[in-house]
Amino acid sequence: MNPMKTISLLSAFVAVASISVSVLMMSQKEEETAAVVTVNEKVETETTTATSMQTETETVVTETKVTTTLPVYDYVPNNKGMTDFSKLLQKDNKDFFGWLRINNTMVNYPVMKDPGEIQPNTGYGEEYCPSNEYYLHHSFDKNYLFEGTLYMDYRDVFGNDEETQSENIVIYGHNMLNDSMFGSLDHYYQIDGFYNSNQFIQLSSNYKDYNYVIFGYIITSGNAGVEFDYWNREELDTKEDFDWYVGKIRENQMLDTGVDVEYGDKLLTLSTCYADVDNSRFIIVARRLRDGEVVGDFSTIQKVKPKEPVTEPATEEFEEFADEEFTDEEFQMYEYEE
Image 1: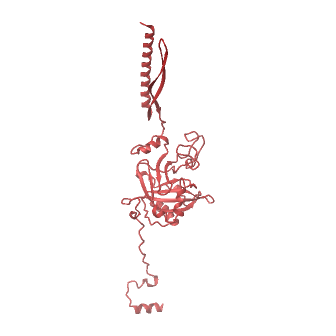
Image 2: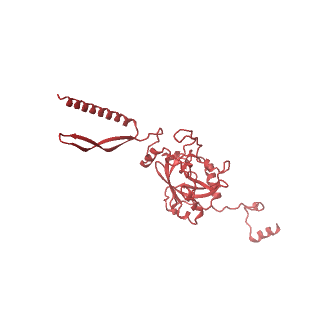
Image 3: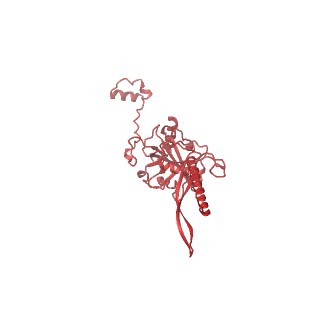
């Protein structure tokens, strides 16, 4: 046998064996990773053909498969009922928890859930960060960004089980001069009649879209130690706590919306800065729509029922005659004598 042919056959055999081992290893690798993307790439190679008279060079196009593995997080969310959109965004950032929209404002952003107290070198950078501060100046992809990203309080519960969701979801955002983030929320107190055509808010979780109607907005202090520490009021489990929170909004509301709010309603609070000199905040509070209420149709929203007139009790001087009947003349005589 021609030695050159023997070497060629051996080389071909080794190449086939190498491909088989590579395919086996790739199959095992695919089972171990969460997501694998295969991309076909065209590769140009040059082969040289020698003849007795001349040397010809031709280009041969072949296809190879390049396997890229997406990053795998140690955090495994509950995917039951999760939307495809949320699954996609959570692959890029496990803190993604929803999307917030308000018509005729610039509010149309993803909402992150604050990861809580962050220790150095734990996937968020090299520095320590206290709770509810990371996304003040970080973007969705965790890069530094002055205007930050909208985020909900680290204590909020906003999963697929509505029974365990927090009674009050609190979302924070910067009041930017260019109206980005929560900068355009000031339209509610700066533009006459703005509320009348923009009463609704949509907040989507990773599982479902929810609609809310704004029932009040106020300017309040953001200082620690104040009585109305709205940022610590996510769990309004008792009627007393719920009514106290709603009552504080009613007492200081900048507009009487007439929207009815009762214990058992799910609330949404949007918080942004108002003035740096006194560390004040502008907050908007809304409640989730009830059965029969239609988003965009304010006429379907249940309103506060007018209070029934209170009957004044009889005064002490007439209590002894409460069950007796008097003529007008007798009554006037009694009043004159007194």
